Image (cartoon, rainbow, N blue to C red):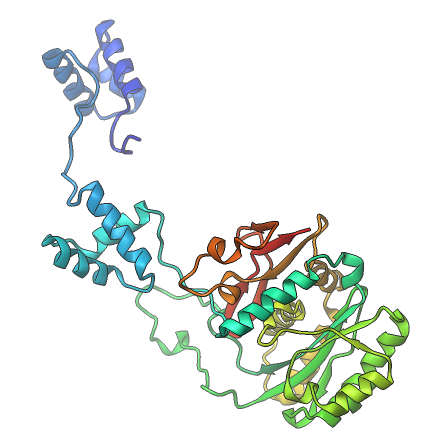
Length: 384
């Protein structure tokens, strides 16, 4: 492809043709909107060489060969956390040729590699990854009607200090450290509250604020299971399934006895799998809703009131959509992120070759689950 500062061959032929017809260089340059000197040099070159195409080999010689370009890209792929300067140093040690970090960055972009923030995920052992994959295999045949009977629940903590990584400001260049452009944030939030809630197709529980911020098994029974979950069990019927994670206060004998006595079936849940729970998306939406309020939240009471009001204002369609994303209309199920199931030394294809009917979707197509300060993309689907 020609450079923006160069004339393509079609335009060159057109210019030469107009001049050969007897038109003046000034008139041709004005008509085509090109500098007079450019048209003049092109005409002189044509009269000297008899050719109007640009000679190959013009411009500065590249500092690296195609083989060296492949070496630079391979070095970055072997260690994806290396910097451009480190790649340049490795290249110098291997070839004895000095190149700049900007040259390395251009070669990497030419090879399809770009500097991006890594996706954040909880650390998982091999056994935990295996358990997650097994859970996905067991549930990939579930239909939308099956998931519609599941009440997804979870606790979440909210604080007065918003996520400064999400908030943007308008500032002039070079004024990053002006007091007006600095966001103050404590390392540990000074004012935070824990809430519990559950979502289901065409419904939701009330947002329960956990007083004193500590959840015990007895409080879990008295404040969450009996007042909220039992009501949905009666409304849905025998097909009702309750989902909660493996927190210590959720897995005591007292909690299990309470569920058994109420006839509530519990969904087996793999350890360390917050990204599989669709309610994480709802927490993210609630956090954005509260952060977008016109007035600042100054104390715990205003935070509780804002959370309660905005929870009730969340569109039911949003809640239904995140639950319905477990299977889509074609029988697919979003199951997990690549990092969550695949160790770093293996590729997705190598890890899942033994799984039949596996399709890898683009991360831009998958649902984005929030986890902490990062985001986990669900981009592997099991096809039924």
